[in-house]
Image (cartoon, rainbow, N blue to C red; front, side, top):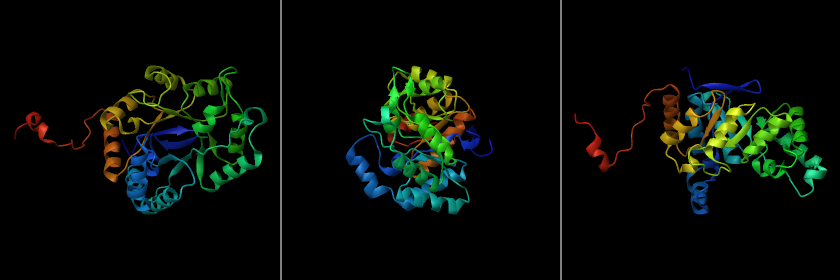
Amino acid sequence: MDGFPRTKVGGLSLSRMIIGTNWFLGFTHTSEAKSRYIRQHLMDRQRIADILEVFLRAGVDTLMGPLPHAHLDDAITDAQGRTGVEVIRVSTPGLPVTAETPEEGFDAGEMERILDEQAALGARFVMPHQSATDRLVDGCTRRIRRMDEVCHLIRERGMIPGLSTHMPESIVYADESGLDVETYISIYNAMGFMMQVEVDWTARIISAARRPVMTIKPMAAGQIRPFQGLTFAWNTIRDRDMVTVGTMSPDEAAECIELSLGILERRQASVPLQETRSKASVKPRG
């Protein structure tokens, strides 16, 4: 394969691996102590740019995360300058949902401010974060209330609308209602971490979705080792779907890329195995 495999979403070519940003921003889904340690000691502009450079040089040019964020925005600029590769930004902004929103709609001025900012920052996709999307899911009418208005505003600004969700029914309802979105973000991993229905149910929903799906948390926020997590993810989604991967170092990024290419190409990945004393008995002699 020449570079990392790609897919098309809303007419735009994206790498099938997406750069995740939770580890960059200290969202570990483990503990506040660990998250705080990452924010204070590990992640800064230089370190993030070093990781992004590895992805970009391998043809992984699509990044998902909140915009704006100072360290991340600066790191993207640095990595683009080093590689000459433009990052395709998939933004997941929060929206101002209140008790009145389902009936009265969003605050028009605030929505325009948020989406104008996304456009100014170069977002190609805007996928309202699940903290907004999932609060507007209506199981009675099987629709996502007011989201058609949001999609229209996104389109008006030349960006591509999608949905970020933790609720599998969001995908089903959006498809049934013909909501104007081009892609979905869905949690998907082998252990069912943070998933609201069983893994096989989610797999079926993803495979039936009318649009490509950006899967997230394939390694369950570090609870599944990369080989197992990526093998499951790549082998149980469609060729047009994507896997979002978060890493904390350039070496981790390179490892996840090579593991994924090995899985997709049906070959043994050339990744060094972890060496411990207990492995001595299983290593071949000579």
